[in-house]
Length: 287
Image: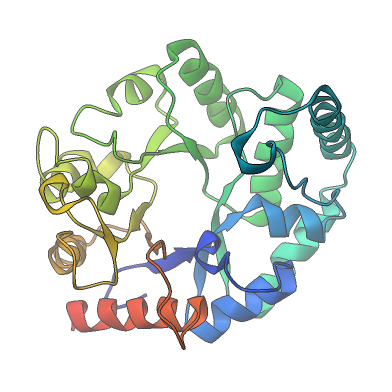
């Protein structure tokens, strides 16, 4: 919390770090000075005893998968699904305690996909509850039936489904999701929004209009399409980061703002240092 604004990060920011265990990710978070996170499913499921992530899903150098590779991928997916439907939530409660004891709140988790079965949906929302999340995030879909289905699960579990956008973000991008369920909220990426061209209105206008339907939002500094839609170190792009943070502060909105590192980490630095640098940018912007 910085002057009333909740600042966190998504643990995807640390993907370049060598150890992706939940314990290591926790250390990265704490060393960055962060106390609230959107947790990717990889470290969480690994901590709970899940199967190792499959690598090499596609053919090398972009070639099509062989039948054997396709069969192996299907087998791995089935194995993961079966594990998810059998794992005890006690393991996730233990993960939550480990993070809480270190002063870190898990406000959201990222695992849900529309292609999952109803049983897997139950798993995802049960995990979110065990971790203490207020919402679970997923990529925005334009399938109205899925938006209604996901929203129904969110309403049942009293945990919001928050849809993430890339450059398709706009003033109307979430209209279908919002209409499908009161439990469907936005996890809008305001950097990607700028890179998509600020369609229909600016990031500030989006916040003003939809602040009561935003579960959390992600921050990065991207340039407009006219400037190449680049992903840059904070303070060097076109995203109005300072104005965004000050608007949240002025209105006393409570949704978390998540730092997300997607620019190239400079030589001599690492993701932990870069998250800390972005956090300092937030402090300066909110001073």
